[in-house]
Amino acid sequence: MKFHQLRYIHEVVRQNLNISAASEALHTSQPGVSKQIQLLEEELGLQIFQRNGKRLVGVTEPGRKIVELAARVMLDMQNIKRVGDEYSQEDSGELTIATTHTQARYRLPAAVKQFISQYPNVKLTIHQGNPAQVTEQVAAGEADIGIATENISKDERLACLPCYTWNRCLVVPPSHPLVQKTKLTLKDLAAYPLITYDFAFTGGTLVSKVFHDAGIEPNVVFTAIDADVIKTYVNLGLGIGLIANMAYDASRDAPLVSLDCSHLFPDSTTYLGVRRDAFLRDYMLQFISMLSPEHDKRTVQRLLHQDV
Image (cartoon, rainbow, N blue to C red; front, side, top):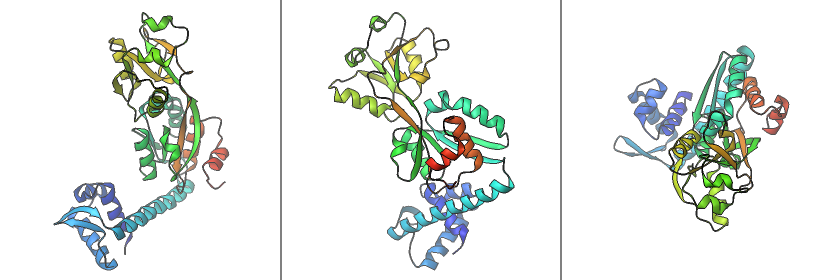
């Protein structure tokens, strides 16, 4: 059994059993990947993959165990390399962050700017997705840090810490009748066409639950993952917009006005998550502290169950 064979089956699974895509990602030939997988199966005396002709169509039951162990080996190798780099290349490396659009657009810029200034030799990559996708990218080792609301804190594979809480506001044209209301109600919001986040994104499931528990059906006419898109369609007169309050800026978003509706919904908490078994380099810990200044590096290590 050789390390590169485990690496090949790991990548094939990552590429949804597409050997061609796996070989491209591995910078090797497709026949070479297939041959090494077959050699490993012969050595183990079992099939890792189910096949239909030459095409891989699934993973066998023993294959699932081997794929899981191979993924663990890949992570252990990554951790070993990170430990070495921590001492030999202290201020250089890579940092991949998975997050939602709202966090990337409105909360990360200050921390990213500070991080790039302090660590110019670290390659920073940001992947965007919904909370479930963010969680899975971190769990699969495709991202070092995940930042999202709701789902990420519920995954047992990840160690998480709360970064900040936020709530929502309603954006409307200045002439809208709701501007005259002293305190908005859920019925007020339901009385107009509503444009808000896709319920797979930024607190959307919480919003739908609040309406459901109140026995009120909102008239959601349009959903988006991007607060700027929501504001654009509100400006076109297609409805009122329910967005994260961090996504509204009075000068930038004029002529729209923001109406407080934080009393209608419980606060949402944005969490930061990492794999429990991942080794975090010093600059990764520093980025976390930049994003959440109330947590110094030692606090972050303790909260994320890292060795101090």
